[in-house]
Amino acid sequence: MARSELRPVIKLRSTAGTGFTYVTRRNRRNDPDRMVLRKYDPIARKHVDFREER
Image 1 (cartoon, rainbow, N blue to C red):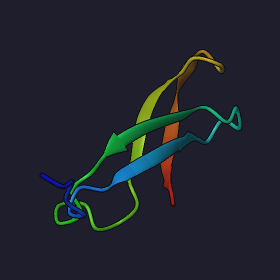
Image 2 (tube, one colour; image 1 turned 30 degrees about the vertical axis):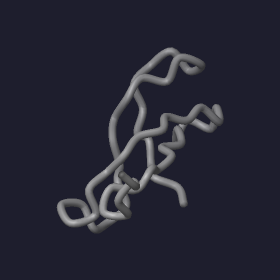
Image 3 (tube, helix red, strand yellow; image 1 turned 45 degrees about the horizontal axis):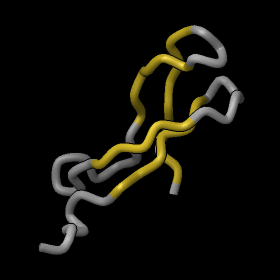
Image 4 (cartoon, rainbow, N blue to C red; image 1 turned 180 degrees about the vertical axis):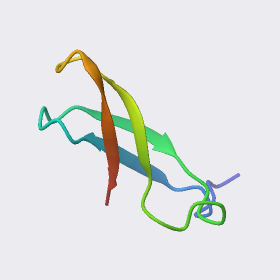
């Protein structure tokens, strides 16, 4: 069964400038805009915003 383009794989890059990324999937129907999540950056050793990059 092929992966659906309704839930594409996206990269979340840290806004702290460390270059750290998370890889996740998101639902395009529920989240049509670019995703921003507050997650832990182990390089900066604190929680920062992670923005979706394409």
